[in-house]
Image 1: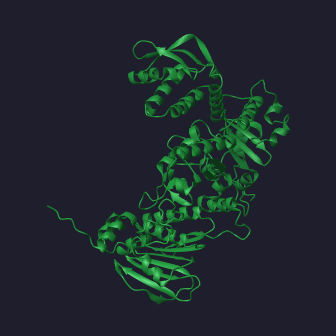
Image 2: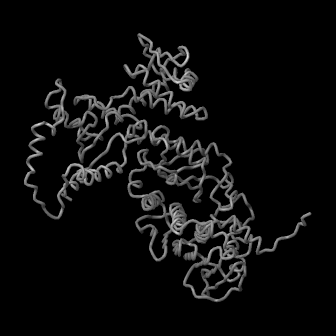
Image 3: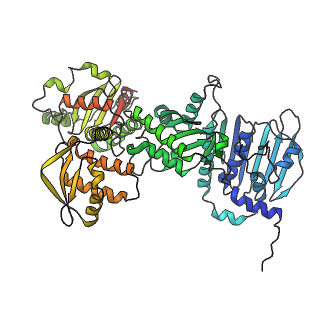
Length: 607
């Protein structure tokens, strides 16, 4: 029978280190948070081999005395619980185990100068062996060096990733802290190379300009395009506040790694909150894609538990449902107001395609800006052939007057957001002129979003009107598809689609949404059946509604390959400008791309 015994302190510290120090990034996070809690305005970090060999972090905070150093490396010693209340934590740190746990598995050197004193002190912990404080030289703040991480437990090294991966995780930690603390300067170096350099705000930003300070820091971390084009959030639900930036739906990514969440200045990773952010975008995101967002929640400390996880990356809310509701509602409402906007990423991608792909496919390219290259001897031949075939002009319907091709009748439309339609290319894309450039619109993608928004509006008022088919249509389906569709017959009826069973493996379509005109009912039913099978029965009603509505709307929209006259094109653009979420189609793809005059001039070497 086993005998219960007290474990020695060195072994207890190593066990605790297994919870707190999973990898170099874990140690870095604890040390950087200590620096911020110490009031640092500047934090400088240096890594060697991704932090495996060495992590050095220096700050200009208020520092520690010799007595403070002695206590700091003891378990459960902290300055962050002045009242001893675990329900009133107002700092980043505190679980009481970070420094002794790091010292138990590495060589830890802490040098610090307390504000107002002239003598700095240093203490060394080598694999759990604690030395006495010694006088040292330091101008200000605290310098912590962690060397030979996991020297006391070398088996742990086998579970680390490559040096590059570990360095990337350290970079992610510093990025998140820099976003949460925009008034603190951060410098991160890896093996002598600067990985991140984020200076503190300039003097033109007063302490009260927190939103502008945060926006500049987010732009520096997440990219200028995000900083310039993301929608601003400022919402409140009771005593819970939400601020931050949410990227446009077309600014999406393949993983949720660009969703950054912060609670009371603390970076957190919470699947439930990330799911709420994704839900706030609703049907504007492609399936399997995730938005870019940096969201900052302010919650009363008594309504929050930040001490539920050893690495403090998770929090627990007293009103978790309220927090999720705030996220979903605020994002959804703001995107409704900004839905016509489209990200500049599309213009940049278009410029690259014109400048690079166009040269590879056609043999033509913009001349270099520095000089002029003479054309080939046979340069007139392809131009003459194109003119003879009429390939440089869009085809116009016989009923459209010639002036409609250039939009001379409506010059004021140039000053609208999407501009005045000038041409239709390949019976698919509308080219419009704006005051400062051109826009290119995908007519099918744009119109299917308009149809979907009309159907959503109809459902919210009097319901979707049904157009009864003069001759009901029989649609043959596989057994599982037939079961899926008939199982949702009531749900589909609410969308204006009336169906019923018609023998084994068939359904009878009696009515379709009146908004769709005369769609291909059989093809629409088959696609809806596939959608319902893929979604399964575990998805929410809202999720099924979004996907099925998208499928139905697709069948009632202007198809690629349909010729439009000038009036039809301009009517489409004006409705887009007045319709929420029209910046992206029902599948999350952009409906239009803008090229500024500067973009066009760069293509031709004018800039």
